[in-house]
Amino acid sequence: MNYSVKNVKTFRGHDGDGFNATLYRDGKKIALVDDDARGGEFRYEWLDRDADKVDITVKGYNGKDFTRKGTPEEKMFSDLAHSQTFQMNGMKEPMTKNMDIVVDELINAHLEEKQLKRWCRTKTVVRLKGAKKGSYATYASKYDERMKQFLATKEDIEEVINERFAA
Image 1 (cartoon, one colour):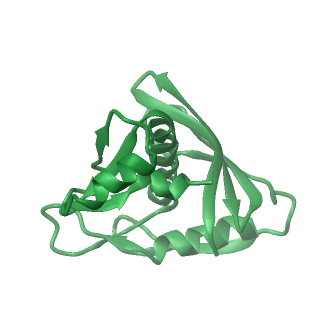
Image 2 (tube, rainbow, N blue to C red):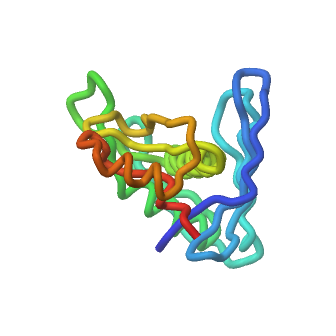
């Protein structure tokens, strides 16, 4: 299963940045997602809301399982999210992800991709060896054959981002 987001609209909200987006599974629209930037969980409008409800079991913050009713698409996404873990600074044990964390990762990846495409229209964008995730360097010149030859002489370039978007 491959999840992605489209139609991402960001805005400045009461308590930070919010968004509206459409969640897709394998290219099929499955939900509308909203973060109103007022704190709290994201809101989901599952497009299969008329389907028979199914049990969704997740682990609560107290470590105990609890079950609730939801749509089949919601269950698939919830199961995927809760099967993933991440390590938080200062925590001994890995934390289990939830749907909001996975959507947040999808939104951030989408916005980063959009920014990189924008930069690549007028600049050469590279990822340097050893650079932190999401860290890029830019050259003011457009990426062309001359710039490609110049970059070939550089040993510290891990990836030329412009090549991701080459037609």
